Length: 171
Image 1 (tube, one colour):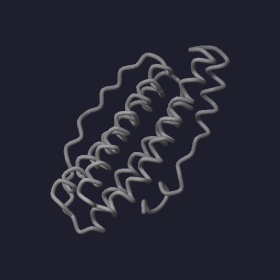
Image 2 (spheres, rainbow, N blue to C red; image 1 turned 180 degrees about the vertical axis):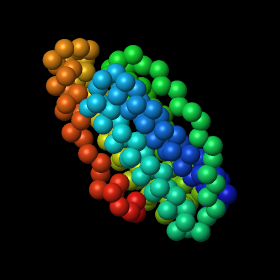
Image 3 (cartoon, rainbow, N blue to C red; image 1 turned 90 degrees about the horizontal axis):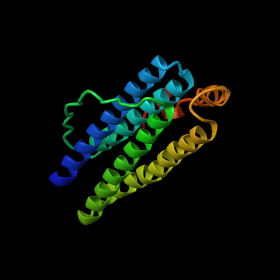
Image 4 (tube, one colour; image 1 turned 45 degrees about the horizontal axis):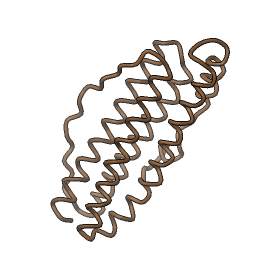
């Protein structure tokens, strides 16, 4: 693998682990806000981000590339409501989508066909990630910031479970 590709994938591994850390911090804050369902949703998101990082990690191992794990900063979690939290989730997912698109463009430029194939999975995943965040925002706008609607939505969000790849190998 070319150095530019290796460096970019290592950067993306860091970004995915940072994402997981952000979502875990958001989950903790939701627990403090007495919204355990939203906390569960974000905890599952944390797990998914770890899976994303490990997909890239495993890809690097398969290609005999050097993995460089980078520093992960303390996440900043600044929201006062579930709606603000999920607006932040959407903004963050758009940031990750942009990173994936740039990585894909680099893979095309460098004729790295195996990476292009892997990144197609990430591109599809990011469409789903943004859709899920928008759906949560739409639901929160519909039910409001308090009362029975928020209680019911919190219960619904708590039903989210981890994808099968979280329970076993990341492959």
